Image (cartoon, rainbow, N blue to C red; front, side, top):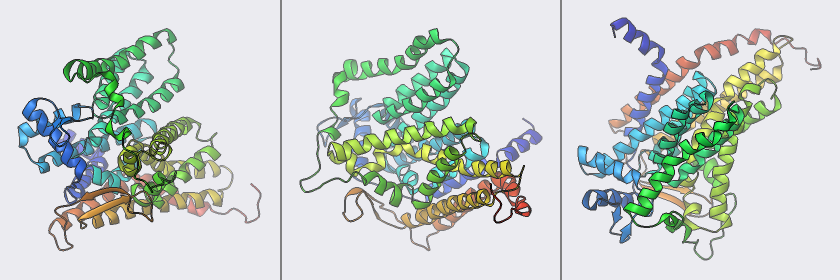
Length: 458
């Protein structure tokens, strides 16, 4: 490639590169975070290095999780050295991969600008920032899940057997990292039904190509290598420990986590407004309505399972660990919220053929305010948590119940890393503003057309 082509490539992808670099700079100033889960998973990776299997001395047996994540971690340790900081660096890389996949999926379903906004919303939440700076296999699972979904969307659209096999192999990798990957099947199934492949007779072959790798890998690990048996998949310790006596789980524990920690009020309000705009003007948004439904169905499925396990079955881990059990829903929350500006702008332009409806313009301004506020709050909390040595993600606001983490190296406000963090914020905002400049300009140009009579019927 010559200089001009490189310059053109950089200019066309400036927004994404700026956002990704900014996210990396923010991430390295936060954490690493530790708790009992990170210690056990570190032991499991160490067990792979010592004995070839994720054996945990603390438990006295093989880790009751899918094994692939621990083997990837062990390989990374072999190459770059054995330390918790090295492991967290690997998780952060997978977190960056998740961010790229959110962009790719958002671009395919909604468009480039929505994909970029979804990236900022996804990666700047304290939910993603903290998990991507903790030695947990959840981020690896989400990366393989999103990659499987991205390839699966192409497989469905092209009706390609090869792509179905690739998507199925990636799904198997996600499932062999953590069972939460099963939620990937929901958007894939809905999109498959929506696109209605022409050759229905090939459906069993396509499904076989997709599920064969997962069945093969599961059989090899659980039946042949570890000797645990396939049914051991359902014998996870999370399903054997109930909440302590006196603890009565509320069915709103996931909502509490999402509103106060996972997403925040502005982010959640943007998601709700995005859905309302799309459903109320479904004829205008007929092309993307199905994608909103896919995102909503996935979110409802993930959260419902978490609520059923935590409150319905009174299980301790799903109740306290909503930060992990509902994690697979975060990309879809981000896509719904990020699609709001495009919807509002389309709604405003649809009205200019007659006279611009002030209500539409007001909704657009509210939507922009909610998203701007969500990003601002995310950045403020990112700055706060980088200075805290202890975090507790409560699931009940009046009780000390939830998921706790420790930061052994918190910053102070005069730390030199604080400048790197601020630079990260600036790069993220720079990339986002540059990507949105045309849509913002189009919205501002509508202001002179606000001449609708106060009492004129619509």
